[in-house]
Length: 171
Image 1 (tube, rainbow, N blue to C red):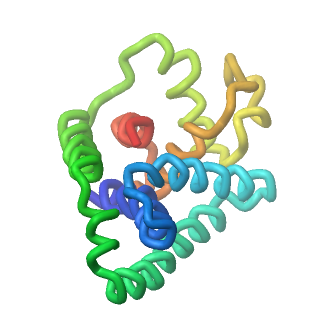
Image 2: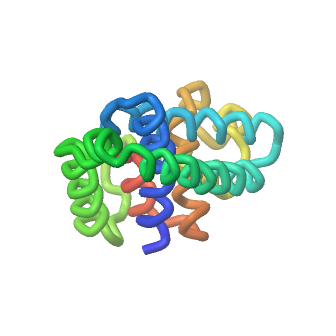
């Protein structure tokens, strides 16, 4: 359950912040928030601080809730119009559905054994970027944004689990 909470905090907090301050619907800011988390995680890996990067992202996303709530309290009508949307309801419903339907799921498809699952496990196990683990992976030059998101979710879970990799990929 911690994975589910951390996932929603990681994905929704920066998106809600951007929606409140830029007066955009939250589903329009969600992709930018998810990519921002992946870029921050990538920067932490480049600095050799993967664990501290995870903690920094959790801290920043949690701190983003304070000005968001202050903004919401001052302008509840506009905030509600940006936040309580059918798109966000669909995202939350599909996330919950995907999480519970794939609970305890194992890797099954060829791609998961040749790259996607292997990359997530190697990055989590060694705390290094895929390009630094060249001999372990078949395609070390693939962009690591998905693997960075999976690393965040796996860090929240505390151990490697294949269903967490699936859930992070859905987000």
